[in-house]
Every structure is written in C-alpha cells, then in structure tokens.
Length: 619
Image 1 (tube, rainbow, N blue to C red):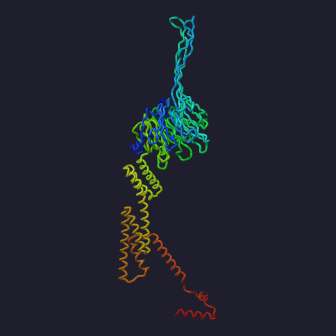
Image 2: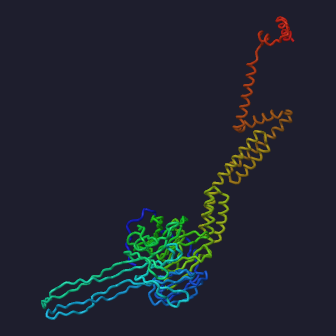
Image 3: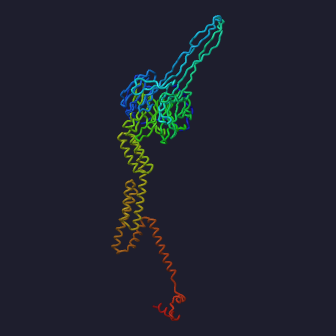
C-alpha cells in the first residue's frame, strides 16, 4: 500500500488516544492453544466449518498454498493453487450445508506494446518496420473455489482485477447467498510523444520518441451469483480493499460497505446511497467490521485505517455519524474485529497493531491491552458456539497461531463483574448488596494477587463505610431521642431499652461522644431511682402524680426537657388557669330580681320568700 499523509483536521468528536499501557501481563487475556508453520509468509486467514462436523477449521494461505487446520492445529488438507493467492474466505455459496473455500488471485500483468513505424531517414527509400514502443501494466485476478473432496482449486468467477476481499451473504434476503468481491489496483501506462527533428549531420528529418509514465488507480465492487454469473458491478476511482454487508435498517435488505480511500455505502444492488466523510483523505482502509454494539437491532461499522504517521479506528452509524474514534500513534493497523470477550456475551472491538492487541469497549474506552511476543500481520476472531468467549487466529510471518481466552482472564473478569455490581449497588444506596459483591470481588482479586483490584475494592468499601456511619448515627440519634421521651413519661424500662440500642450503634460506628452521652443518661436514671427510694422512706408514700412532678423538677435542673413534653405540660397548665378564672368571674351575689326569678310559683308572698331566704343564709 502506498504511503499516506496525515490528515491535518481532526473530527469534532472526542478522539481517544492510546497513551497508557494496561497493567495486565500478556498471558492474562490470551492463552496460546497451538502454532503451525507454513512454507511461506501468510497472506490471508479465514475460519469456517468446511467438513460440517460443527467444529470450525482454520484456513490459511501463503503465496500459492492453502492450509486447512483443525481446531487442535492438526493439518487436515494442503492444496497447491498454481496462482498467486491474494485473499481467502470460507462460506456456503450453494446452500448444501458444506462450506466452500474461496480464493482470490491478484497480480500485475505487464505486456509489451509494439507499433508500426515509417522510417523517413532516406527520402528515396522510405521503409515501414515494426518496433517495440512501450510496456503496459495491468492488475489482474479472479476467484477460485475448493469444494469438499476437491484436489485442486477450480476457477469460479471472472473478475479481471486484483481480488482484495471476498464475502458471502444473503443481501436481498431471498434465501440464496451472493458473493461480494472487492478488487482493484494500480495500472501503469506509457504515453509516447513523437516530434520531428533535423539531423545536424545529414540534414534529414527524423522522429524523436519520448515516453511518459502515467499511473492510474481503479477499483470495483461486484456481486456474483453462486453459479458464477456476474449480477452487478460498481466502479470506483480507487482500489477497494475491503467489503462488508451491513444491516443498517431493521427490516430492510442489507447494505454494502466498500472501503477504498473513503467509505461508500451501496444498496443490495450496488447503487450508491451514501459517502462517508470518514476516513479522511489519503487514509488507507485496512479493515471493516460490523456488529450491533448498541443493542438497537442495527449494525454499527468499524473502519480501521492507516496513514503514514498514525493508525486508528472509526466507529460509525448507518448515516455516517461518528460515534467515537480511537487512534494509535505510529500504528500500522493489521486487523480490527468485533468480538465477544465477556461471560455475558458483551461485544468489544479488538484492534491489532505491531505487537499489541487493543481491546475497546462499546464506548471506545481502552479496556485491556494484550502484549504479543511476535508482530501481528493478520488477525481474525471467531466463535466456536460453545462459549461466550471468542477465539483469536493470528498470523506472523510464516506462522499461524490460535489463542483462547485464558482462565486467569476469565477469573479476572468475574472479579470485575462483582466490582461493577458493587458500584451500581453503592450508587443506588443498596449498601448491603454492595458489600456482598465487594467481598466476592476481593476474594477473586486476592486469589489472582491483583493488588490494583484489591485497592479499588478497599476504596469503595471506605465510601460505603462512611455513608453507613452517617445513616447509623442518624438511627442512633433517633433512638436516643425516643429513650428521653419514654423517660419523661416515666416508662423507665422502655427508655433503657431504646438507650441500650442507641449505645450499641454508637459503639459500632466508633462514636465515642454518642456512647458517653448514653452512659451519662444511664447514670442519671440510676441516680434518680436511688433518690426516689430515699424520699419514699423518709417522707412517706407519694401519689403517682406527685412523684412524677418531683422527678420532672429534679431532672429539669440537669437537662433540658423534651420540647414535646414541655409543650404538653404548658398546655395543661394554661387550660387549668383559664378554667379557674372562668369560675371566679362567673360567681356573684344573687340580686333580689335573681331570687324572684328563681322562686317557684307556690303562692307564697314576696315578704315570706325574702324572710325564708334570709333564714337559710343564716343557717
């Protein structure tokens, strides 16, 4: 691929740049299953169940050899292609349940161009002769297929250009798969410029030829039917390096994403529907990957790119909106793939560059970094269907590696899940559940000797403990208040019970002041009990109301009475005063008229009544 210039303008969206290295060791995430060597450098890798035994095989290609390896790394088949292999894909193109191996070829073909000339050097003897003029270089390629039980690849598709990528999918949802082919390359033409000059020695006219080299890049995306029939081709002005079907609409046909200098979106008939502004000009599209990372039933598209100075990945929606971007300084991107790397099937984006794998969560944040012992040339992820964790196939030089997710990493993820749940519990004030999850997380972190995990658990425990102290102190204060209320109502047993509970909480949270306050209250109640017993012995029994009044008066000198009790007693006193005042005001000496009005009608004269009333008064 040609060198590219770093774009000057960055998107307005936040750019996530890899500046830190994750603390996990290289064996924390991936565990090497096997390694297999090839006769030459690996140019392509693919994964699929070619023998229909429900277990996927790994297919790798070198310059002209195909290697089929089973899941344990054993070589099952080896084919000699007889042509330069540029790409490989495994898919069922005819719907028979068996997947075929599709091979793309790619090469530059150079041929001579001869022209007929007339030699006018001798005007009396003009001659016509054939001579070499210039060379022409064209990119060439086709698609070949290996069926089960085949011995050699057979030609399937006439493409006529360097095949860069192959993908098989049912684009129009009719139950029949189509074959997508991305192709293209650089064509070199030599333009001949001829002019007449006079020979200074002979004076004769002669032709002078100058050749000018012209480079032109072209590309295409094509749809082929399983029988090899070309259905549609879309021409582009640059080589198309990658092609992927994407589901941008919930219930519609699939679209096609073509990665050349930029990303062009085509419908299922290869009619252009959108041109994305990402990547920027002069970027090279290294890889495309599609998955529904937002659980909204439509795909998001990851575009891995490389420039002369930086590499990275864009994640875009169907309308081209940039969700996020992640850049790797001086990174030559060798692969990008959405993969399930979580016990719950959570989707992550894995980006390969140099000797590292960068694992990003759905928001574009760096979750882990996997250091590799070799430089990564190609990377694929795939699922065996037997686990929520995907496997990795990686090539480096002439070697193929299969990695599984390591048991240590799975345990570490278990601890992370416990910790994440604890954080959620803490944020919702469910402190009991938070502490239970943190206990489980600490156990696993300790098992893995992960000091960082233990420290963050302790930090969260500190926050929970602080919040719990506040809540418990409020509870203890409330119990103490209830104890005082019961005490003022002369319910000593209840008061002591509330006070004991309050003291236990104060001691539990280390509130010395609160515990001392409770102890002092206990002493006051004991002193009061002793005082009452002494009073009963020396002064005789008191009524309940008198004893209570005496107790209140004594205690009021030591501590302030409860506002509720004070208010109650004040109301009672005011009521009694008002009642007495009313009685005093309403009483008066009866007048003569009052007596007359009140006297019964007995026929007695007024003088007799007055006399009788006076005698009663004397008595």
